[in-house]
Image 1 (cartoon, rainbow, N blue to C red):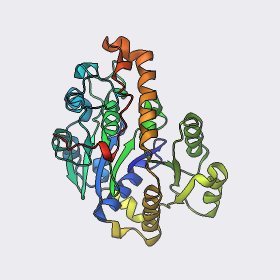
Image 2: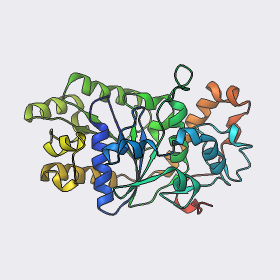
Image 3: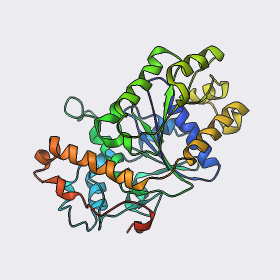
Image 4: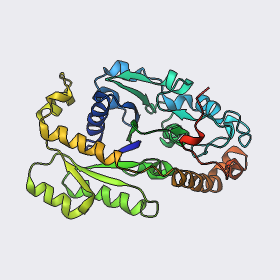
Amino acid sequence: MKVAFVGKGGSGKTTLSSLFIRHLAADGAATVAIDADINQHLGVALGMTETSAAAIPAMGERLPEIKDYLRGSNPRISSAASMVKTTPPGRGSRLLRLGGEDPIHGSLTAHVDGARLMATGPFTDEDLGVACYHSKTGAVELYLNHLVDEPGEYVVVDCTAGAESFASGLFTRFDLTFLVAEPTRKGVSVYRQWTDYAADYDVALAVIGNKVHGPDDVAFLREHVGDALLACVSQSAAVRAMEQGRPFALDDLDATDRAVLARMRAAVDSREKDWPKFARQAVHFHLKNAASWANAATGHTLEAQVDPNFVLGPPTRVAAR
């Protein structure tokens, strides 16, 4: 299952995504975590040192290699340079299996707390003033577009704050999106923004209330997000210790917070895979990007990259080679 964590800056989405990743990995689930936030903190939240987290190869810096591998022998894609972040797979493309033996998982992941972690990479001095963060998160979109995940497998993406994901089709690439919201007007405003932008795309969204102090906070969230509110977590002393860099284990959480993580996983597992919809949405945004900017930027007619008879899914999976 493909899972996203979104929310406004400071809402606690990185902390909650790291707890969810630890929960999955502790249960033995095959788990790939991706830090796609402009502020790269997921590795540290999972227990890495800042030095080791910064040493993870950046997906954004290896984009030409990722493209060249994924295009495989697809006759509709003439070169890696003609691929963009929305390019969908077709016959001949190399498909990925979660954590498989392929150059992407082999060279761009680090093992941490039972999961494999990838990172888009931070802004560099060369990026400032001349690039946007979409150039890095585009690697994540390509990865998800070519990934065939199966039951019991999870890829969890800590997305950049706010509505940045709407700059491409990335927001449609997930089976379930967890929106982390504080019980404040600013906290619920991001929920309204997401529901407005995603209204036409059948995006499954569940709200996790964070930093909730009591029934009044729960009532506030329920008033503003309704049945989208899946669960709430309080300000845990164990989580605070983790955020301060002190030793932490999932068993340090109280039973209520552990139950929230289990409820979140149950919500993910209850989602039914819809591969045809996944493919339709990929094609939709690829055609939009082609017409808007990508044809001019690449010098190619990118509409021709769409393989009309190809639908990603387990029956079409090939071993990465």
